[in-house]
Amino acid sequence: MLIERTVIRKAEKKDCAAMLELVRELAVYEKAPDEVTVSLDEMKEAGFGPSPVWWAFVAETDGKLVGISLYYIRYSTWKGRRLYLEDIVVNEAFRGKGLGKLLFDATAREAGRMGMKGMTWQVLDWNQPAINFYKRYQASIEKGWLNASLSEEQLANF
Image 1: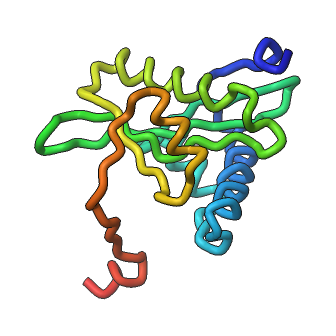
Image 2: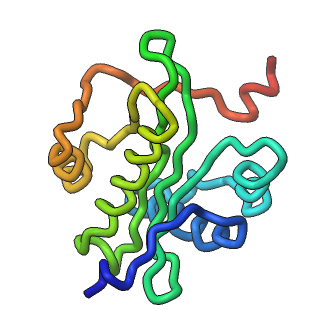
């Protein structure tokens, strides 16, 4: 059985190349393949340099990295410290086999272990499989919030 052959563990620097490939796969699924602009060196530095800004769990099946759950800590002025789940990705060939649940559960346990006041993430309004997945956890899915951002080029104008 696949789950019995899968190990969930903390990501290591050597995992970054495979993790970035999964991020690119997610971008294709989310219809934004050209939006992934982070380099492998940037990913390594941000996760394993002197001041890491992200951490991750990986799912490894038969020695192959097939899933990730990447997270970081954010601060809510209303709620306090919260774990932010940036991305949870399972390789297409391995979806629907319980690996997403293993990764999500490991991340939620980590949030509790760290004493976080909660865990938050985003889900695209058209991604019904993901919405259904999160509803099984009785997650609150809010309406009414719009994402806003400034690009690197826009920040340079300041």
